[in-house]
Image (cartoon, rainbow, N blue to C red):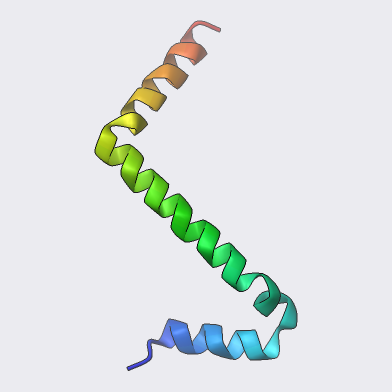
Amino acid sequence: MVSDLKEYIDRRKVNDPEFNAGYEEGYQAFKIRVLQENTYKELGLIQLQEQLFNKKLNNG
């Protein structure tokens, strides 16, 4: 069963060459970023990054 989103993307790839040209590269970059964020969260790096950012803001 194909989802509505998949059907939309497939139609848009056929009808919009500009969308089709950058879709795969953009989608791969998105998936990598999601994996990075999940890894950072698992390792507790998001909280550390936020603490460092807040400290930098407060120290001017």
